[in-house]
Every structure is written in structure tokens, then in C-alpha cells.
Length: 79
Length: 153
Image 1 (cartoon, rainbow over the protein chains, first blue to last red):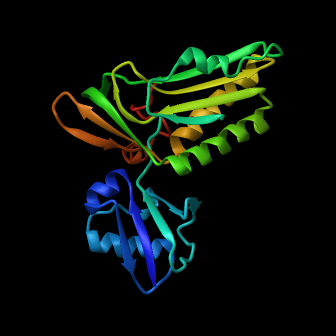
Image 2 (cartoon, rainbow over the protein chains, first blue to last red):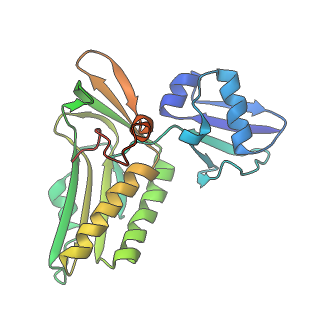
């Protein structure tokens, strides 16, 4: 199934892109992150990161649907 | 709007006026400033990246939580994005309430939640010419809860 992945801040620099369309076998947000980390070989462990799906904060165990937009956030540092 | 992201300088006087209320006897303001050093490095300027759609939504939730939890009268927060210079205001929180106790607590709650929950990232540009994204991984590893030296206080 196809999903869209967006990277922010450090992740964007590590992945070398802002976003990509990914065709994969399906699964949870954590599984997609691991897949992308393997492809880009540089993303940090998901325990240190946050995930949002279609502009809502989400849990790593959320199962993804066709067409979802998955946002991978590196550790935040506002203020 | 109780939570805003601004690409231009924060007007601290206008922010205070936004929570003005004759029934309130207390105003607590927190300003986060751009400091000239972090972890032994001389900081020249700083860059904030904000994912606005979610930051604004979640920021409004934090303000609503503070009002509900502490019973304060008004609260607002503005966070900058873009390139900031030394002494610029990076973030401001203003809280007003009839008495000071709940205003102090709510102000602390809002800034702590903003720092840990909103999709905002900070890149420090050092005098040495190097720049890097700041994150809290190393402070967690160092075993202190949130005494991160990049906090502006």
C-alpha cells in the first residue's frame, strides 16, 4: 500500500528530503519508521522520536491505512 | 487566539494586554530569550523550525488544559519561528488570575508542556561556524530530569 512520509528538522537532513511516497507491505507506524531508518541508514531510534498521522499526534503502534500521511518528528526542543 | 506562532518579533507589551482583566490581581509572564552560550559553545544565533498545523492545534490544547487545571482567568503563549538573534524573545507566556499562586503554577505548566510536546525544533549556530539541532537526548542520558542547559531561564 502507498503512504506519504514527511521528515522534519534533523530527520529531513538525515533523509536528504522533505517527503517521499512509500510503497510497502503495511503495518504500524513503528514498523514504517524502522523500514525508513533502514533505507536511510541514519534515522535515530523511534523511542526518541514522535509520530503524527494526518496532522494528529499518534502512537507508534497505530496501524497505517492506504493514503495516510505520516510525519516523523525528531525530539522536540521548543522554548 | 490563545496560542500563536510568529515569524516576526514578539511584542511583550501587547502580549500582556491580551490577558488584562480587572478581576485579576496577578500577572505572571515568562519570556524565553536567546542566550549567548550553550554547553560550552558560544551561540551566535538560533533558528526555530515549527510545524504550524500541529503546533497551533496542540498549543491551544495546552492553554485550555492550564485554564481547566489551575482555574486561572486568562493565558496566552506566542512562540517564534525562523532566525533569531541574541536577546530576542523566543517564547512568551502570559497568565492572569485573581491570585498569584495559580498564575505561577499555570505559567510553569504551559512553558514546560510547550517545550516537550509541540513540534518545534531548535538549531543553534555557534560562533565557531558549526550549527546543530538541539535535543534532549543527552540530558536524559546524563540523568537529570529537565535541567537542560538550553533552557532559557
